[in-house]
Length: 249
Image (tube, rainbow, N blue to C red; front, side, top):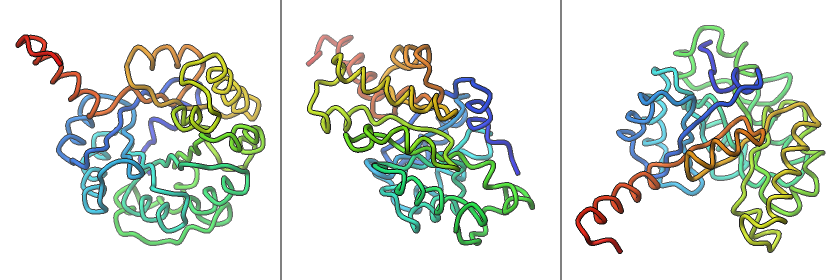
């Protein structure tokens, strides 16, 4: 099976930097894949991806060695299996609030005996004849901590066998806790998740809007670090053009 660079890096205690895609464009996915980042997050929860475009994005990302990671719309057996059969080499599962929900994600993402994933999907054969035997150990599974309930049970969630990473959902967490984003209380909650992951011996991940924030979170100890999205880059580029024209809003 092909190497999962992002997973191998975070297992070694290194930082794997990635970018995210929401617009549903496999053309932009191809551009990102050739940029040299470790992984690309295809966001089907809040992004504008249908199945066909998600599949095309994975098809252009994977051959470059960049790791395609999908955030499914929800923690459902079918959605998780569909993303993996399309060729995703990792998952960031949203709104996981309990160890039982984390166990459900593990069950869906892994073949027996660790899980109950159904064998099938012709595309997986392109990853090697040993895919079915090697997939459990080479598929990155992260679950998102983004609610008060998840925060309170972060230690239990982190201890679930088969998880590779706790991934922060800082925006939803600030709303759920009723605290200002970036406040001392918010940062304390973030640190609590990082500590829970460390206590369980697994890395933690963080979605960042800028490279500067990504470097700061990596310094803090996060290992699966998102550095920005195509939407953010386009907005910044447009703003720079309009400023140069003297028409900044």
